[in-house]
Image 1: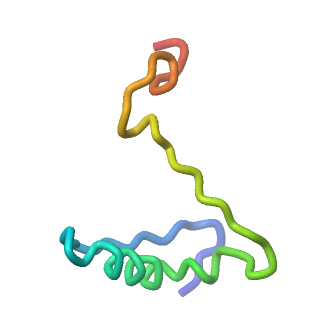
Image 2: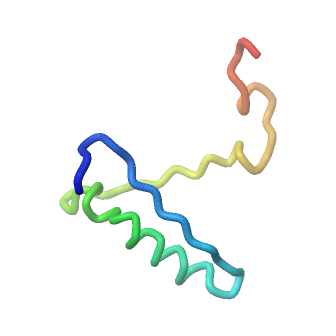
Length: 63
């Protein structure tokens, strides 16, 4: 079933030894090919503030 505008989630248990293969399988299970246009380059942004705390970067300004 296809629900336009709805996200698709895939969950997979992984281990350090298989993380790259598991990530490829996860992307396949999530059917990322259907969401990304093949005629355009796609850039993935790393959200570094999740791993490292930076003042005024990790929270909304009113908090």
